[in-house]
Length: 171
Image (tube, rainbow, N blue to C red; front, side):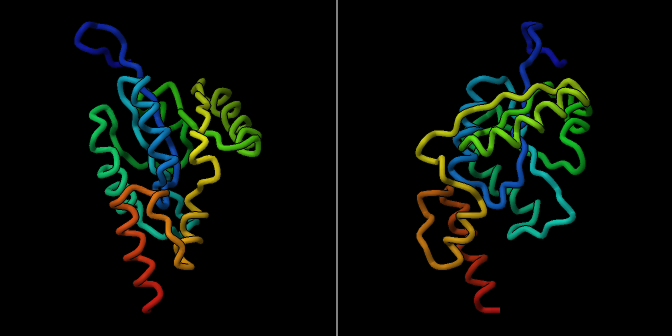
């Protein structure tokens, strides 16, 4: 594990997700993780079987803009297994936000699998109650029908989201 200038091992974690688009709930978890860890890598999952509203490059750009105020946050992308990414980059912890018990059921299985495969630990962080209902899918659906999602996503994401949806309506 890389050390900081004092020789103390740097505490590193990854916040993985698709972030299509990044929401204020995602940003809340990233900000809180950045207060705990020396470096937080936000890992944008590349899923070739899904076509997102935004490309991976666009999501990386949106995340970089939304986290610019966090000097210890790095944005990256990965395909395949999270544990393989963690091994390659010497990251021992994945941070996951939990909105509800249903999230826990799925994420617990993933955490146990990740630990069994590569001893990657998972830190579960309870979502801020302001965002407990929030998901990227819900944001896209509401925005598609003209609902106001401006308080649910960072300002730059909102601008890009409304532009993208306007393009899809015109085409």
